Image 1 (cartoon, each protein chain N blue to C red):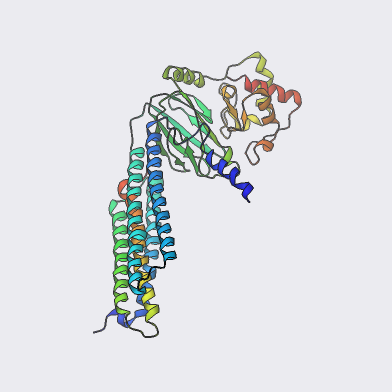
Image 2 (cartoon, rainbow over the protein chains, first blue to last red):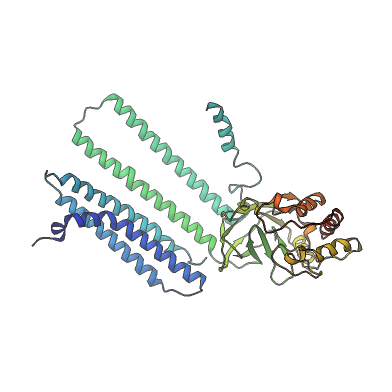
Length: 117
Length: 324
């Protein structure tokens, strides 16, 4: 039984590289939007909306990191495309790790600061 | 090129001089920010020295021509880069960030206030209202020393930011939202600040002067500020000019038939330190120049040039200067 990575290696490599920045951007926009609405309209948006979004973003980015790491181990050998795949898989690991950290930087203020102060 | 080096170094070296500095705090909030700044600077200095040391070692070893197999060296280098270039900086940044957030949380935590003042940002001047009294002033914020002051900030036009470095950090002043900040001045004096969010052509001339007085002096000032303008026979001509020309369409002078709120309240304008939000030191000549051609002094401001005869201009300037 072949894995997703074996059936669609190209797509999975690109997913590894792009998931981190896309998820981080989406989380930032959603968190900014929710806070702007909450503070300017004096609405009470439940904590779960913020924490759930952050958790989902973290899981997606972590998934991209693990998947890129798995692709790195699969990209062995010396066929013509192996170097490129290794590079993309390694880039996926580094980019995902970086954006996971960026995500943490975005979530910490939500946890530590009053939202409309 | 070398001629530029010393002037640039002197400019950087003296840029923190003057009467305003976040490293010379005069209140508890400003002190917390100053400590945060010093700790950040110290750790950043250590990191900078460490990076330069690594660079020096790398350069030195390259010159020596270390004979290590490429694959082994490559693996070791990768580990070093990951640890010192990724993990340790990330850890340092996280610690910094957590510390910054802790200080920010401490500064933004609601605290019972002795005095509450409304701060309203306009393009390009500040309005200060003292709830519970009729006192309204512009560009000069009077506060009592040693008492916690709550500022409720909002804007009527664009985003501004209220910043008096000696007393507290920046707080955004937003349309359609009231932000709150607290400050305490621990010594009497005058503290300078400015709008810290670019808000248009005259952003640089949106200065703030905070005057911290002993509580009894502050109480006397507030009592006087809440009074309507003093009517004097000497000011009758100027008052007539004020009311019959465009002035009264935008400005308010309590006690006179003028209740507009587009421009600053001028009820006690003669007692203020400056005109034009810091452009001129307040004087009869400066008042005359300002009224004669505000667009020359502050292009783009809402204050138009009003056509007045020399006698009218003089009477109006004298009248306004007499409003103490």
